[in-house]
Length: 264
Length: 258
Image (cartoon, rainbow over all chains, first blue to last red; front, top):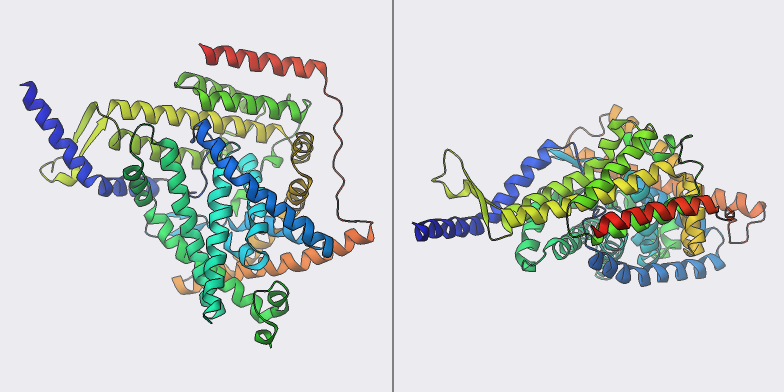
């Protein structure tokens, strides 16, 4: 009798393991359709154990420090640079609050918005901008958290900004058009944030379980929102760059996004 | 853009916590957060969560607002709970047998140890988030910035935070106006037009940001700005406030130990 129950249990386990990815997808899609808004990018307060929260802080701090160093250097040359960075932080904050309908999940989600300042002001200052926006959001909107600030800065600020600007500069090097490069920068930046958040979540909540299976499940769980959202973010970044090129190409030249001869 | 209406500043009026120094509130919150994160069970974070919600009720924060704040953390908590319960653990607790159970896709098993671990993380999320929500409602932004400055957070970070906060509401208003104008002109009818409209909206905000930053810098330079902004100076900490904070942390520590 006991061996029968044991064999039944192991059979069920096998099935569950085999189809776990599909089941995760189903469950999360059902859940997403029940809530009005999904904020998949921020890791909430309390989700990470103390050790992981401390580790992500340790990773984030040198980047934020470097961002501040760059800010000090650049604001010595141009006094209007600090207000500009502050205003960009406000814009990133506003962009990350924009509700974007995601039809595949039947819900609204929010873009990261880090590719835009990364293209215009560079990735180092963007890490600082993201850090500021995240702290305000954590305190006054409960998006993200104080102890998860480090993890959120690593995913949104560091990975989002560096992946976005890396793709943008690489494509521009190969003479790809401005709007297309910006589109891919926005899209890859969004997906990099999403992949890093999945790594952080899986590492933080796995306990004694192996890392990779849980990471894959989390990655798949957010596919319905994050894949289309990446495309939307790409389109948004491309639209922003196109508009700037049309109306204030001098600004793109000033920040080294395009060469002076391209603006003519 | 309905979120701007639920910004904590709209609610942090006069209440019994508004007189307490922001530094004390911040230190107590950080101490309790550390306890919540390092606790290995469920009870302590739940107690902290109840306490924080009671504080919010005492500050007369609308229940709807609290639910809105909790929406995102709860979303993640549910995802974590589902993942931990169904896909981790060894001891099988229950098996879902739907009418078409012969179809293996619909067979699902929950594990008691996975569920327990999921509940532990969920309680940690509830405890941590409720603490930060209470802090956000209890502390005006400017006082919070002064507390950060007292905690030796670097000045450039604080200055950028102040600039960002000053213009947040301006850009929220701008974004809302542009969005309504686009929507009224069928800017979001169809995927292609919608994507284009989002791009224009973002671009317009960035353009306004550039123009506004130039105007702000000019105005500040005319008033003697040399690259550093003045910050609110902290008054000396009151012994009574420190004593109350100490008692709260000691009680929290005692419950944590139990």
